[in-house]
Image 1 (cartoon, one colour):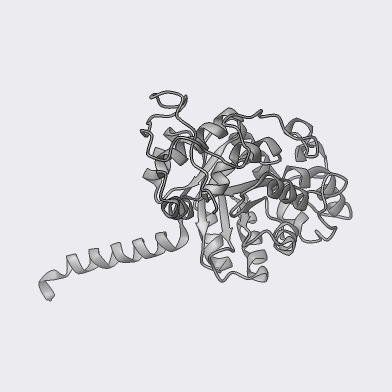
Image 2: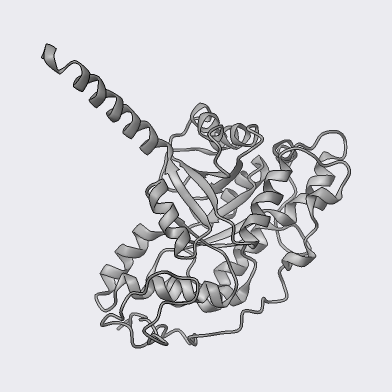
Length: 329
């Protein structure tokens, strides 16, 4: 029978460095991975991917200006562990995307996994967010199928969030789909992408390929017991700009395992990312929750969602109106 991976024993009863809280070990905290992964593995990256230090900066080309600076700024903040606050876009509407991007968020994620957003709408939403000049468009693709990566990247996405990454081989394949040859296997077809980075003229596509594409953010999501178990080897594979925790699916996966606690899994994820010096991201349910998560070591933070902002504001305004007119009821 399949044996569920569980967590390694905690090293101490103290919170990991950089964290403000510690969860006591649960009943499933005696072993983590039974997939041949040791508790701590080297943080060195495999040789196939492009190290951050060797990636060409978009600002290095005199032809490049405009919203590509958003990508540089976002990457720089992540690398320096400065919090970057995003909004989650679930409404398939370029108008909504434009309005939310104008509110001052550092980035906006166009979610294609749990929404009816199709590739054409996604491309319009990417353009709407990039057009703000202040907010970087990121796309969460719905699966690992290569066509989703092509559509999102060719539309001009500044980054890709990939759901349910469970193995190092999946991570390596994801990076290859995001990079052009010889490093990767992304096909040439980015005729619209340069517009999202302020590139114009006959060299726009060349400038995008040569000076921008290698800096596109690649962000795997860890949202299962298997993914958490294999995280040390995923991190060793390299190629990611951050790790994004999917708290809801991760909770469901942990509950299904019956032999561990979510607190233990979260501590393992956080410590693994810290050991490998990789930024952490997470979906926070509110601005206050995002602040709390930052104090726990997260820097890529979802501070709001479009549908939550819409519904909560509508409900609040209706409640206020009824309160002001209660004498007439």
